[in-house]
Length: 432
Image (tube, helix red, strand yellow):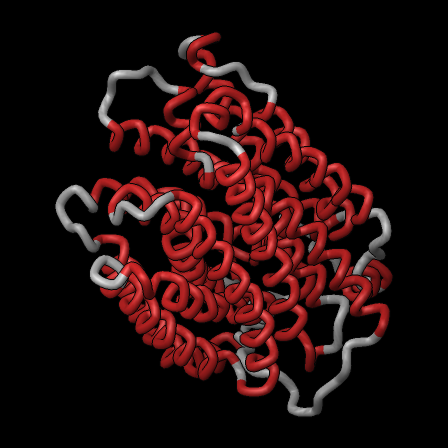
């Protein structure tokens, strides 16, 4: 598994910047569609489940449907990656965002429990599953797509910019959620305004489909096709037969990535409201600031990967993330006035996750890169990302700081993986 790049720098060309810009923008719009759900999870829980049950159970049920989107990711990711390795990256890149647009707009149109009864949460679950299948092909495909368009010496920066684009979708979601909470009363949101962000997401998705039409197939795939070096068998079978070590490391790294995003960025606004009694507008504003710094941190980390290599960036990034998360969750209860700067710092250090795609796109040979990255990333995110909200919500019943302890444990794992990366690189080189 290669974890460093050639020392000689290479600038991104105008064509590279155009590809990165269109990919990042399209990814941002699709990621907005996927995560806007979590910003309205409390409202959706009240609307799509029967009344009269405890608030924590309503949250658990709503987070369960949120998790279903993650559990559906492997299937969508495996299917799209298979055809991405056989037919081309661009086609699957466009299909994923089209499926996302349809399902997000569908949520905006759903009747609630008061109208349909138990059919309402079932339909919500179906839309969420379709969203999961779509995002399962989007994220790994995007990383492989941009890494095959740029020079080897700038893969880190390309992955960082693309990841920043994806996370800016979270920022867009936070800004829209903040605007909805500031523009409408709680009753108005409950009655109809919750539909607005999902309707916008559907429109954003269809715009992104159009943007993808301007992209060209990757040079790497075109060369593989011209030389007839595409995988002759099932790409996933090749991955599982010859690259299990790379799969294992990629799964563990994605676990760290998922914990950082799901807990620190997606769950924290709800935790701030329900456990620290911080008003929704304040919590969402702080989240928007943190997500802005997350976006900047992704680009910075990508550039550092090209300059310093994955081992150092992963180790120092995991350490910095642990310190920042501990400061945020332990200090805010006593000093709520420090919420904004501490959450901003935590968001910046979460940006260290862009080292993960840098490592993964180098872990697999080009002929099966899409399948290797997609399988590892989606299986890990389905298990760890999907179950994290449920596990943390349940753990909070016995440990008031379960959310912090969970992230800190995975930061320790990230540091340990950083120490192992050189050994893994040497072990994998011969197998590729």
